[in-house]
Image (cartoon, rainbow, N blue to C red; front, side, top):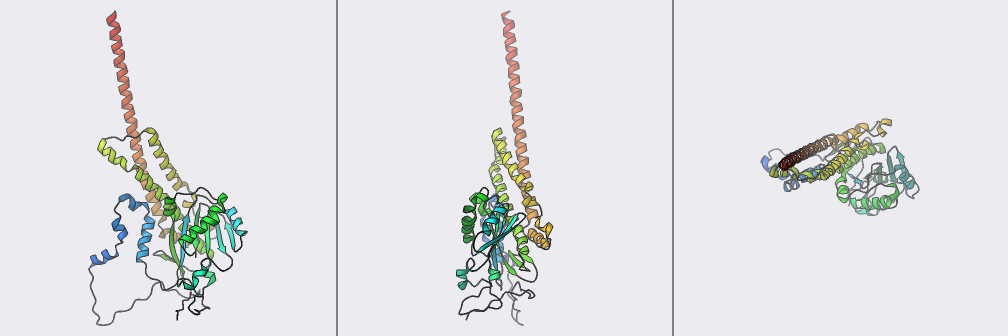
Length: 383
């Protein structure tokens, strides 16, 4: 007989970790060397990847993979939250109106965000719920003949679309389904309301996911977010932070590409004493650098506090906690420091090119003076 799984009520405390068994009296303790423990816990992916630039390309996703490997098995149900970033802009008002006219879906927009959800079952993924043990069950319904009873309110799929192109999915079955859904219902059917698409590498770098469950106090740890209410405002706070982290991951990839394009310059300067780059090539690199730097520091969706929290600040502390968890401020500072270093390198190259051109002009002037002197001497010789 299948076991029952219940969702906690509002007043019920949700344990995050299963209680550990206490050792019996007289049981000998095995002492494990510290080095053996550290070697066992060290992620193989970080050992294998020694390349300096590859380590810096996607720091958020590398940390997330390590956390997932070391994540404890949770005793309660956990849902999925995934963010995708395929386009650089979405017309929120028109997309909202389009989904309001679709059967089985509803949408509401507020400032620069659109919340979309299914209005009636069967929900997305419902056909597989009978065999999936990680979906939630209601407190009233029990397991009947080995089939899972689902709390439809908790399992309801919904997503949050942001004007800067991010889409945060809650309770969708899989990453593949989310991509198919976004391609069909948004990028194809509503392509006129979407901006330019990002490259495949940028889309992959911006994708991220965490798990969520319900408890009596909000927290986020080891890529597991514990929601304290069923209020959509709390999900919106988490979605905002996750979407900003996704957008920042895209900029981190672009910064990494700038670093890789310029990584040969210091080595060439050491080996040859100068760099063979034309003024046009140097100007293009400086332009790419300014595009990335201005995009990061002038993008209001990445820097400013969302307007939703100016109107309703109940869940703003949860938003701040989630931003801190994703280390948005530290990552922004690190990205700007890297861009400043590349900018200093470009300035040195421009100074070197100007010096080289000045030397050439000096030699041209000297040659002209010599030619003039020779001509004067020849002129005096004839007379």
